[in-house]
Length: 237
Image 1 (cartoon, rainbow, N blue to C red):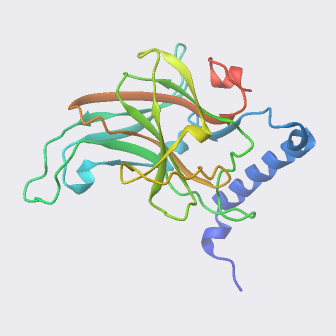
Image 2 (image 1 turned 30 degrees about the horizontal axis):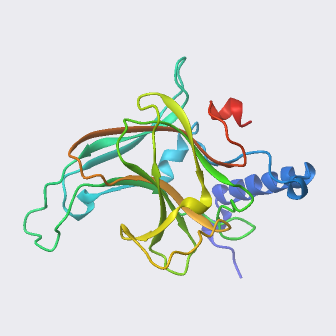
Image 3 (image 1 turned 90 degrees about the vertical axis):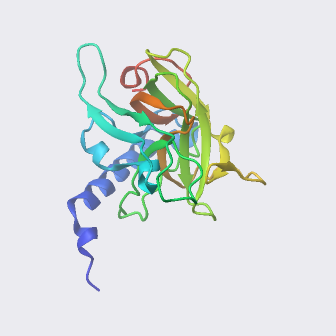
C-alpha cells in the first residue's frame, strides 16, 4: 500500500511534529497530572499563512451583496500582529431568487485541517475551562462559532462576542459550557454539551443584519485555564 501524496506533503510532517512537541511538553512538565497551565494557542495570527488556512462566507455566496475580507496585518510599534475581519453588510435580496427571504451576514472560519501521524487533526480543549480571544471590536453583534465532530455535521455552537471597550484591544473569555448549540442560525432543542475533545473549526460571524461597514481585529485565539486581560503573547506565555 503506497502512502498518498497528501500524507507525504511537508505540511503533514510539520503538523505531526508540532503535535508531538505539544504532547511532549505536556508530559515532561507533568501538566497531564497537575492540570494544564500553559495556554493552548489554536490559531496563530502572527503567521501570515494562517489566513490562507481560513475561509470567508457571506450572503454573496447565494447572490447577496454583502462584502467580506480576512486580511493578515503585521505587527507595528503600537499594535500586535493580527487578522482583520472586515467588509460591509447589505440586506438587499438577490434578484430573481424568490426563495431567499433574508440576507445580510458575513463570517469566517478555519478550513478543515489536514491529518497527522496521530490521525485526524482535531483540537482537544477538554482540559481547559475557557476559550479566549484578543480582539479590537467596532461594537457590532458578532458571534464566536465552534464546530465539532458532532452527530449532526451542520451543528454549530455559538456564543455572543461581547465587547466591553469598542475600539480598544481587550481579552474576552468564554466558558466552553456556555456555548449554545445551533443549526442554520436557529437554537436547537434539546441542547447537548459541546464536544470539547473534538473541535474541528473556529470562527466568527456577524448576523445583526444592520447595513453598513464592519471591522473586527483578532490578535489571538487560545484555550486556557486562566482569567487575565492583557497581551496574549506576554500574559499567556
